[in-house]
Length: 462
Ligand code: 5AD
Ligand code: SF4
Image (cartoon, rainbow, N blue to C red; front, side, top):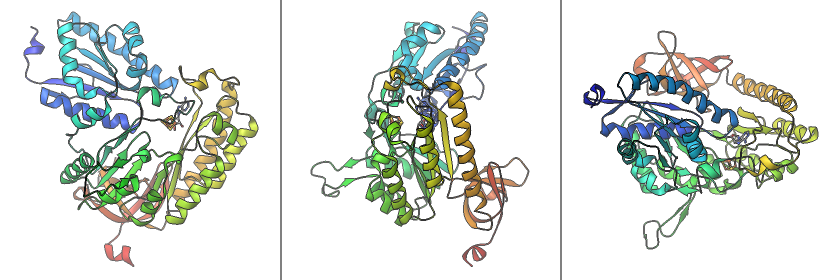
């Protein structure tokens, strides 16, 4: 046995790529490893266990994993020749999609674990040590995962909480239905228990997460008199969670236009704890492209939905995802995307060049768009989206917004918080205000944040 094995605690380094779901899953894996004696470290060099929690959504994201494995190989080789050990695990969507390929391309990987199998990590690690070979765990067992990953420590006043996983939508560009599996909703009791535990630890804001968060459904079990056979959607869940004392803010992401229902729109209009921010990806503005993408909505139906949401919550900040250069996209189709953007007016947005993902229908479609063309379209789209974001931010100047202070700023005496619209806000404020919500008058905007000053509650009410 090596010296390292005899030492007291063990260490794990987790590198997270991609979406908020991965950030959440990484926290969960850390929580699961803690009882096994693993402390989290912030560099891989001396770690006993390194986990890469990967993203497969675009080609570049997947490539990053292999370059990181190249760097880790050098560290592991040096460690092993010094008589030491290092276990390398690849988790996340690349693990799910390319498991056997990872083992073939990167033999120093000991364990490949898909997103549905994290709860098995302790057993899998033991197996990897016992078998001294590669362990591949990429089956689907989502509900069990929810149950076994419930315990978690809060890290700051804003937390994520997964309520739904998977996707049945099969947009023709997207790998998620293949890497995350079918839509599964977590039960109300488990969600409520986790929310309560987070709030007891000082959490003020919870962001409910799901690949299709508004596909969340709860059918009360037969014979549950309390629920009286009611079927709940996300709106009802938000109202239910809003009853938790001490929980001040609720957010959710990512929503799909197909799953926005009247219950959710009503909750957005009536429930003050629900923040006025909605991430509602549209992807494109041409009905021909939306159809080829299998989105299940048109540009007009999306715009009608936005109008309904704005009628219920006039100050809502809208955010979207866009893809340019999907196969078959002509200049005219792209112009339709720009026209939709002008009509909606986004407060923030994410936009991407179409990336051909193996195994998705889009990859085999005719009319793939040249890289140059994609670059030009993306630059034009991003210029418009950026102008809208800047305009939305500038419009806050002079307003008094409640800000949740989440962390210290770069300058002494500065705190960084979030506005209801998810903008970063820089304020001079005492450390003692970390974790609290206070009114701030917005005085300035920088490219990525707002700046403001604290005001008294009386000033805010005036
Ligand atoms: N190419 C480019 N962007 C993609 N997205 C998903 N798949 C692809 C792809 N193959 C984008 C979509 C989605 C966001 C999370 O990533 O806009 O909403
Ligand atoms: Fe991917 Fe479409 Fe599902 Fe979103 S809705 S995860 S883009 S398949």
